[in-house]
Length: 479
Image (cartoon, rainbow, N blue to C red):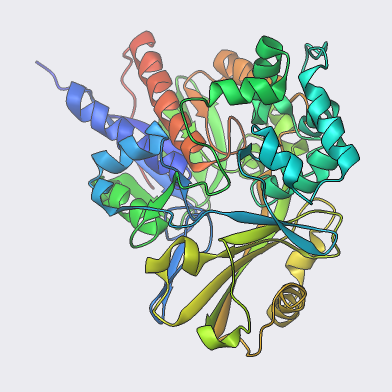
């Protein structure tokens, strides 16, 4: 019996989507004994993308995502598989306040991303005027939306609950997640369940309440989890489960072309990789550059992304003349602030902060206010401290500050996004069979979304393998 030549499945991009794809792909290839191997190509010398943890002076500081929903099966399942389940830690305090017109108000209990599901706490809040409350309660009698196509998330919430709830509750809560203009963001691509809920129950408030009746939703958000040693320890655990020869780091893909029945991946070190299938898990801007010769990728060039930054500030406890209540606050656009959110890390995740210390994590940058991200470190720190001192009294300079800039990394799912992505993938299936897209630019940008996409794309790769003719191709070659 003649051994079959080994075929290569290339994965471009070593963020969580690409890394999880490599793990699940390599696992299944081994289980089924198929003559394929995985090669993950990452432009940076490290893996993880936006997931990055810094340990300094006893502090564990997240530079990117800090947590994920505990009930999400995608993350928990992968954590279990790579031996990280025992390292999971639940949030200690998740109670938020919202800054409206320069005043901090507790976020009403019983809300889901600022949408009231319990009327009594909502009617007692002082962050919404009497007229705003009456307008929101009108959701109980408003007819179902007649809009059948995609629509903006902001427009949908404004029609159901009014401008005031949207601007003073929902938008601030989502400010550090979406960062973009919620009046232009796609409802179907971000919160499709909301549209389906109001179509089924007519009232968005009553529908969400019924959907979550078996769970206790409140502003504490205690269902969030992270890892004891930081989110990057999860990345390291996944990497540790893969064969060392799986990775090609510090090398950028310049171009991908279909040549006969294989794909030739040109690298910036003047070498090339030949692959039978390719998973592209890079940000959409980089993906477009790789396939610039194929006109149907133009939608990626047109897709926008927002720049944001996080600023972590470490203090002694005695630097504050007041108690910091809850786990932080979010900021409405009606307030004269550059900071969009401030998280009290030492209260949410006490294990990340040494005794006697305080760690604040602030966010800046959103649609219409991105230039602040390009300021110098000194300017950003001063702006953030000035904002913080409007609501708290800080008497000492921070022990240190860490700034993480994420330039054009927050993809914006504008109205029609889902339809455009589906059309692009349809064109790829026809013209470039064996090429698959996954990642935060397409079908969800959260950690669970990205891991879920990796599970899906691995299944698609195996379906492709089963369908194609087993024509021998070159073993992976890096010239």
